[in-house]
Image 1 (tube, rainbow, N blue to C red):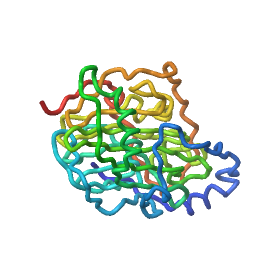
Image 2 (cartoon, one colour):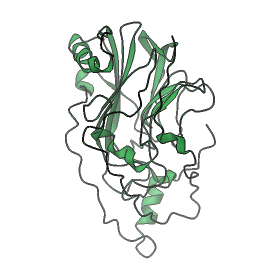
Image 3 (tube, helix red, strand yellow):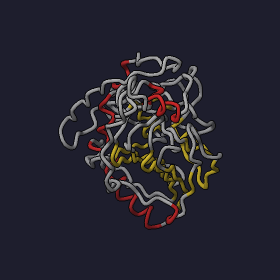
Image 4 (cartoon, helix red, strand yellow):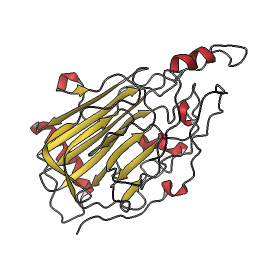
Length: 315
């Protein structure tokens, strides 16, 4: 996936930013986030979630699944929940610079919001497996619009819920946070992924040329799927552009903030319906100067990330 740029501790960045002659005062704060969006499924310790450690570029241990999960025609029995907004099969994904799909090599994963999360500065990453009948019944209702007319309605018997709750970005000099969720659901054969979005207040950490005060600019987050076969992939429209911040207001189901896909026999439809008109492009924020010793990632160079195509895996 290519070499990652070197990071500098946020404490050092904040020290540099506090030097008024060079950087100016820390006078710009983000708006406090409101309640999570209604599309989110229950999460947190009270429903039995576990959590990753509060660290930069962290990940969960390998999680062995109670149910086979078929992803692009390959059955998986374990996965990792990565702090940087990725659920991955077979290997951890500590990389903090989002890349366009397809990625070289066998790196199958789901990316609800691949960006440079730093939970040392705020937020939690939760996860759990569940066979709770109430959760499964809600999933069945919510997934029903994701299947074509005439197909059997989804009846999941197992679910995996990963939630990034009020997570901060690397190098943050604000109180901006993001909340989003990835849900895997299966009946043992048919498999779905839902991407649910609460409020998204930032797109980019400072190691990817983001502004420390706004969390915008640079190389924004990536959302979608990578099969690991170098052929089948899907980039959610707006990925790696400022429009990725509007995922909570868009949908391919007509439900703002929810995206759903069948992934055992994968098909990503062109032109997901917009729920409130075409979202405006969020202007890129002005960049603050960065320390001369800070190495940054390369700028985006793959325009294919915003393409909308149909990719089918399996038969």
